[in-house]
Length: 492
RNA sequence: CGGGAGGUAGUUCAGCCCGGUAGAAUACCUGGUUUGGGACCAGGGGGUCGCAGGUUCGAAUCCUGUCCUCCCGACCA
Image 1 (spheres, rainbow, N blue to C red):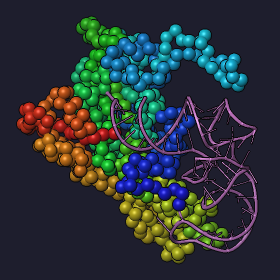
Image 2 (image 1 turned 90 degrees about the vertical axis):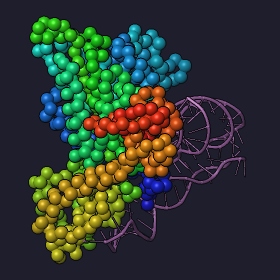
Image 3 (image 1 turned 90 degrees about the horizontal axis):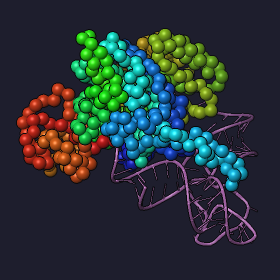
Image 4 (image 1 turned 180 degrees about the vertical axis):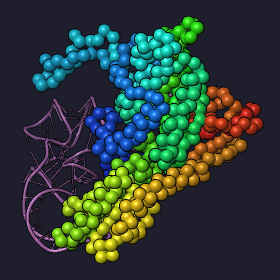
């Protein structure tokens, strides 16, 4: 009973924290704003990473690694980028400690060891990477450069939340260089599609593809594309971004190339990233008051088998059947765990694996063996059925697909129900306060109006959807003419 | 960074106001009985009371500082 989870209704934030901590995904650490990702959480991240990494490679990208530290002079080269991140940078100023002469056994920063130039711990790697690309690019024949990096970054956030916003987080960042603007834009859009494909088809999380307004754009980008997801409490979550950087970084780092006619021009750039934040979104979108609900395609374990037995003789008989089943499941590439530990009884294990979100539970006892069946329980719907052992492996294979699909459909139905078109300010405010979710409304296109709406309602423009329908209307705040609706929401 | 709450056994917490031998539940270990939705009996081990100073004969308790966490707000490509 010590592991009881706070209900969503009682305290949504506490529910979220309970799931992460008690589900065994992560722990708090001794470092401000930084978390420990535990083996179960990291296994989830590894599965996500492996799928994404293959997608990147299938679209022609290669991995590389750049330094954690960025000399301050490089960091400040692209002015807007530097300004945007300046407030949340960790900075290395010294390179040595020494024994504190005043306190035995304590260390102090050695004032003699001050760095000539401070090093910024990367909050993002455009600067160090573009400084490097300068040496890699002379001719159009050197382009495109399609590089991805799996890395950690540090952003000194004021208020942190497990997975959703931590001071240090894991991510991938793609940084590409192109000869033409058109090619760079195609790349930006292509990677947005990769993200949407991954998040929808692997994480079972429906997203809206769109572009950010100038206010919400990445510092240093000409255009920011994004995918936006909706959480169960009606708040939006930016799940991934893909930036068209124009020639901003090429100009800042003086990266030019000769085209076929030997004319010099600046290189065109993109960058794109998703992070461990996706895990936070996954948790918030799918789980319930009994614990996590993980989509089969990325769950660390897709199936857990719990034996129910009295005495060693029964256990032996069950073991035999289970080992056959495990072989069958492994041949189908299904990740399975057999929990035959004797320190917990079946009921305890049921609750434990529900909390950990394992998609399918198989229970086998003497009663089942007599009928050559096993009890199958779905985590997402809690439905239980008895299935003949001879058909079980294939049944599980199919059920995993069904669960994956069903989770996506459920999340999509919720998302679609929570996109509300409104035409007046009153409707707008009321929808945000009572119904929550995305609100589709006309906006006059000015940053000032966007800012005022944010001040008054805490809602921001999440995106202007791609392929947005054009229609005439009036801005909900100012009444000025507008040609399209945009999506507002309160967001994480 | 502002406001509020907190840090004592692996975990959840009591004890603090009013200073005097560190407690409960649960988890863990041993033995036994159990096992189809978080088992039971008996015995046992485990805590520099976040950290550092100070007051005191004596500090988990009082004072100062500091670190970390949670909630609300500001901030958040």
